[in-house]
Amino acid sequence: MRAIKSRSGTAEIVDLPDPEIKPQYVKVRIDHSSVSIGTELLMIRTNPGAPLGYSATGIVLEAGEGVTHVTPGQRVACYGSPAHREVMLSPKHLTVPVPDGVEPEEAAFCGLGAIAIHALRQAELEFGETVLVVGVGILGQIIARIAHASNYRVIGLEHFEERRQMLLSSGIPYACKDEEEVAEALRSTTGGLGADAVLVCASNRQVSLIDSSLHWLRDRGRVVIVGDTGTEFDRDLLFSKEASVHISRAGGPGRYEPDYEQLGIDYPIGFVRWTEGRNVQDFLRMVQEKRIDIKSLISHRVKFDELPELYRQVEATPRKMMGIVVRFD
Image (cartoon, rainbow, N blue to C red; front, side, top):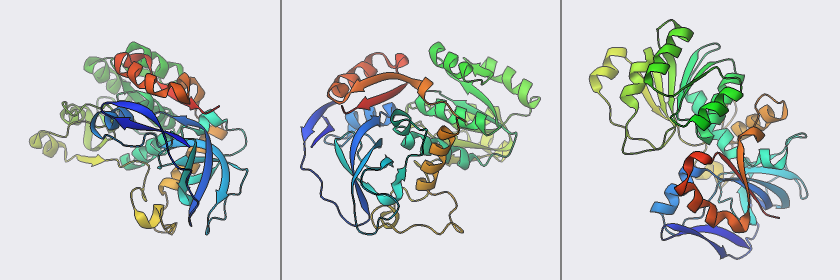
């Protein structure tokens, strides 16, 4: 079984033993995965030997003890386990049947979709409120489209012209290149009151965007940090608006919890309405119902063998990359 791992600042294909099924897991033959550019490049730079990828789709080979919702031969979407590999063991709560009408390369983005949905839930927006998305790479694009489909007023901020045009083509009317354009968009959408929430999707730990976000925010609004950004801020500015700053952790409740992910113990829906697994389900529903368009975000389709070279291309020309699908045929 072949897989991708990081090694000394690069990525390489390695041979691994075929995984054996175990209770509360599903064995899946992967045929499509998606690349989370920022996260995977960070792993390559900082974590030698790390397995790469976390979002994929494939066909069930075997269901372990305690798994009753999927059967061998069924197409599923998988989130949270190393995904750039020919065969993976996927926790049962993070293995979701793919609905009819959802194509494999769309289902491959299930992990990014769950992360986007959880970030919007962290913003605690209400019907018709305004959200500013700072940085519209692949994750920011998905967040903006889900927010737009949910009837929030969406403003995007992005320096790259190509990404702004992609945002506009999805029907979102405000794609800003600088702070002056953001201010004008906020005047148009909120009458100058400010955004109800700012979601920071940019990834650069050397730069903190919290202070800028606080300026754009209404009184008692929320800043949600989604990307890997710096976290320094002006305490007086935060105090003046009694704003709140939140970190959005991956796909939702259950992430990194051994009882949920490894032992298969679910949270009762009456106490935790939207677990990470339920967020994956809701993303696939939105794709099935054509509420969001994922295929138009795909800029590159590569074969599994080409993936190590793709990471080098992303480092050299990031502005040309958006949604990346890996095929295992």
